[in-house]
Image 1 (spheres, rainbow, N blue to C red):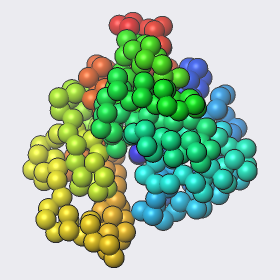
Image 2: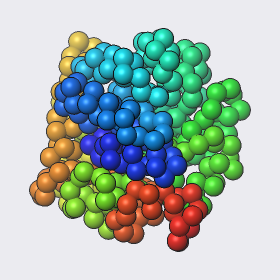
Image 3: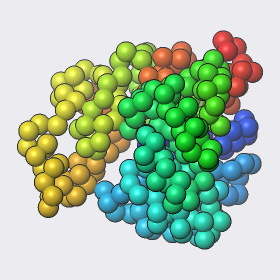
Image 4: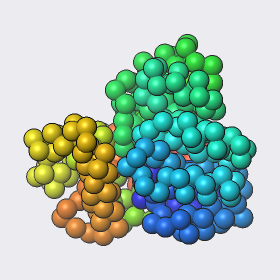
Length: 299
């Protein structure tokens, strides 16, 4: 999760019996990213991964990929672009690659490129969500693809986890319910928002990255709206300018999220998915995991 996932959360998750991943963009410099990977290599009792944005909006992509391969993370999760270069370099270094997909067409493309598993991002996901429900997407990919399918979106408790496994998913990628954890580095206000707001408060915005992204519908989000204005829409479609405009939009949007995540401000833009419906209190990562797999109260 952008800005949220950190080494403490991943170590806590692995100690509880699951795996965790951190977006490379959570670190401002390559030195910081490398330090985090080295800490996880030393202190994490299980496999861990790094999320990479692999399109042109991520100017640090190549050095982030190099760090992951050189230091030997267990897996890379790719999003928002072609994973071809990532798959080739990661496999040469013995690193697995899981690719975010939202439909069958892209799933078959990345499978043909040699990815190791599909992260099936459905419309219940937080962040950059898909258009299909997990009830539609999981059976579609399981029928037409031959690599593991990990469902992303909508899982917030043991019951929903079991539902996606019964549909045939090989695993689940879970994010939003871990924002309200003791190990998360974000502000108390952000964590409490995860507790206080519900699924009906999640809206889709194109203002953060140019790609539809889910956020909590705070008073500030209501004030600024969720759609790009006419000029932004035109620039986003201009063949010569769209690369730079998308990058600028992404940088500006990520700065807005960063400002909101770590300090109290009326300009609150908090990223989350509808699974916050299942969050009722701030807990340690280990306790969230126990409830999710069915070993805790209120299963």
